[in-house]
Structure formats: C-alpha cells, structure tokens
Image: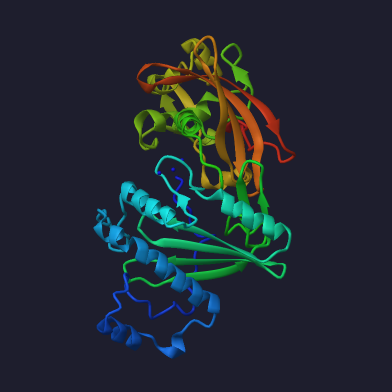
Length: 411
C-alpha cells in the first residue's frame, strides 16, 4: 500500500504496561473446541479480570479482528530476529494483504507503506465522527493499524457527555504475548483543512512525549513524496542553514558549506562520517578535513568555483584543510526547537531544467501544517545525482526558524 518512516501508525503514545494485563486471551483463531475452552477456562482467573469494562470490550473487539487475518499472519514470511528480544517482522507485501482483507471487511484501516506516510483509508467515516463530536453528539471512531510485526494496534475515539476519550490496545496475534491497554482523555484536538488530525493526551510541554499525535486523513501524493525523499533529507534542518537562509548560485550569501559536511558525506557514502584519526583544533572545537576529501564530497552538490568554495568555507591553504565543527550533546541546549517534518507540497520544472520545490514544514508540537515554508531549487543530473541551486524562505510564523548560525562562530 509509507520518511522513518515513518512507521505504521503507532498507538497514541508509548504504551505502558497495565497493572492487569488482560489474561485469559484465547489463541487466535478460536477453534471453539471443548479442549480449547477448558484450557482457557482454567487460565481465566476471576480475580485477575480487567476492572475497566472498556478494556474487556477492546479485547473482544481485537480478538475478532485478529481472527480475520490470523491465517494470513501464520502464512506470512517473517524475518529472523537479530536479538532474542526482537520481534519477527513481516514483509510489507504481507502487511498489505492483511490491510486489504480488513479494508474489504469494512474496517477503518490505516494504510502503511515502506515509502510513504501512513493515512486512514476511510476518511469519510472519521469526518462523520468529527462532525458529531463538534455538535456534542455521542460518537465513536475506530482507527486500526497492523504493525510490521503483525500486531494489531487498535484505537477507539469516543465522545460522550461532552468528554472525549481515546482507548488503545496492542493485541499480538501469536497468543504468547501480553496485551497492552490504555485510556486517556483527549485534552485538545484539531482537524486541519489539509486533512491532518492532531490530538493531545498529555499536558502541553511535557518533553517525555510529543505534544500532539497526528493522523493523516488524506492519501500522500507519491510523486511529491518521491521528490521530498530525494532532495530534502540530504540537507537537514539541524545546525545547517541550507534551507533556512536565502541564497542562489549567483550569491551564496550566508550559506555554510562547512555545516553541510556530514550530511553530504552521509548521502554520498551511505554511512555517517566518523572523525576518528582526523586532527583536532581544541580552541575552535573543530576537526581538520583534508582539502581534497572535503571538496570531493561537497563540490558535486553545487555549481561553484573551487576557489570560491575555499574562500567561503575557510580553507587553510598552509595546512590544506577545511574546518568542520561537529554538533556535541551540550549544543542541543540552543539547538532545541519544535518538532519539524518537511513536506513537498508543490513543484515546477523551470525552462533551464531545474526544479523548484515548495516545502511546508509541519510541526506536531504546534499542531500546524506549516510552521514555516521555503522554496528550494535543484538541478537533476545523470545517474540520480543532483545539485542545489538556491533557496528562499517564503513564510514563517511568530515561532521563527530553527537556530541556524554557522557552527564555526559558536562560542
């Protein structure tokens, strides 16, 4: 049928183990045999039954749903865990087959993908729930996800008597794992014009959790997300100003090539840069990157004269090196910013063959689809290579932009 990937839609938050972990769950599928019934009756201790009636209701509902896809789960190829505490993972094709089956059964499924963001396949049902909730009418809405392990992730949003709750359960289909159940009052929620539903269950500003969780009701545009994945992660928004300052090939302005070093290295080599063995300058908190090494990585991404690069990136001709300052853990004190997720929302192909991408930067911390926006122009080359041509910040809110002062100026 999804950048970390994101991943399949998770439970509302990190799931906490409940004090009573819903015992007595029958292995799926339920054969109905007398032998199975006897075993389960023995396991079902009355004094350990869940006291929350919604927990029992969710357990029964999850059991019904898992029984629909249990055979597919059993037949699916599963990866071998790399560690004994890891869970086997199903191929995406197997997850897709399960999602298709449950969608055909009329369930409100989240479509997951390895390449594109998750989204709810039945937005019309959710919009109906939202409309009822806005009118203070009693309403319920399921949101169902099958995780990569095959585990069912179930949520029910409930609006009743002016109180909105979300009930969540993780239900492993193997019959050998404990259930996880949570219920929370929804403290705040918003449904945006772009079809993004944000909701919050913890006090605002609690850094242990994301302020808001987001559920997409609109299918992602594969073409736009392919452009996003190809051109945006290479630059980064953390301690790099490639996307946070205005510049062009005719005037590189304040663009810091030095801060791009590790990001371009990762994109070129497929592995993080490790400075082990490189000379270090303590008074500048930076490493010496040999001139040829630096230029071989950086120059292919820009149409720039090597002499100009040397001038702009503080090349030391006497010792033949470029300074590069890594981001240390204590630097994050001033790098701290709201959560951001860039999304390409439009593009245009220019007469010279370059492509200008419009990027809206979403923030789940602030329940906004556009914390700031910019346009970046790229030049596609052969064999999947490309160059950055320019950038312009086109919009920002009162929250401003992430900290983007060049690292070599940090004290």
